[in-house]
Image (tube, rainbow, N blue to C red; front, side, top):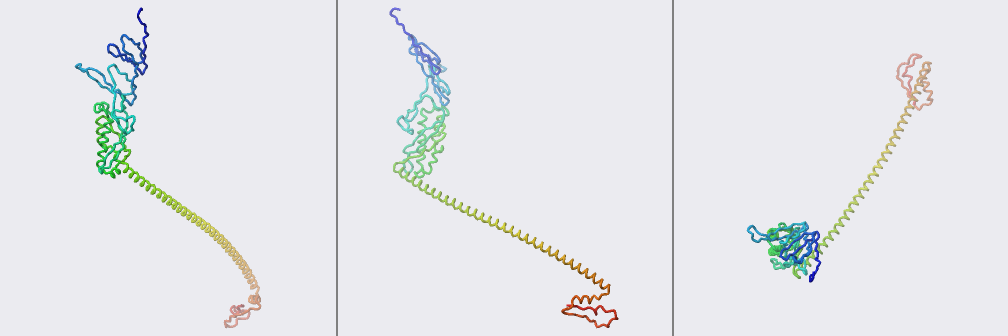
Length: 383
């Protein structure tokens, strides 16, 4: 081992989400997916690097190119789309497409776009949105305004997008600007104020929808976020808005006061109606109680009258019975006296010794035989 050197070879290892990239001195490249380990061989290897695998979730995709040969042996490049979720480790003859789209610059706002400012390799295949301001749009009465939009879109066909455009965001911005310019050129400023709702309808953005379909996208919605005019015109517009708002608030305040007054009047009316109904009910109750009392008194008086009539009837019956008994007794006595030969007339006259009047009935007939007096000759009335 004279004049020779002993060197410890470094060991390189890759985990589950890594791979080893070995570049050989003969120009070949070896890819070892993890988990794997390899010693660096300075005789055959130029380098051994541990690379991270590309993890793709369900909302992403990778565009991968590969060197190959066609049927006649000519060099050819194939393209394929790797959809997530997946772990992607490229082979030695593959590379990943890098997108360069228009994007928001680092020192700019979210509504300004710069070509090739957005660089990425993982393509998002879920719905997305973008802010866009169309500046200095002129209406047909020469009013300059800035229209603020928000675009919602979704990628439907990756292959169609790769074949038709290299900057979908730039295409959307240009097409939306063209639609807004065409819309504003046909209306005045006052008409624009009254028809801003049309900027929320996809029918207004015909060029944007056509361009999106041509490059494999769908425009799902466009939202009008407002507009901004020149400083003086904007100040006038703001003042008009403030005045309209003040008048509307005043009108709402007055309407609220009127509603409160109406509610109070309605409540007072209901209260008066309830009070009248209560008083009417109380009066009806008093009348019913009075009627019941009168009926009770009448019934009591009727019972008293009936009792008195019954008492009087019993008394009259008793007097009549007594008179009848007395008359029967007197008649029996008279009959006995007559049977004994007593002159009843004298007896009756003797009971009234000094009559006020004496009425005699003289028929003028001849005197009857002795001992036989006529009945009519003996009748006299003592009054």
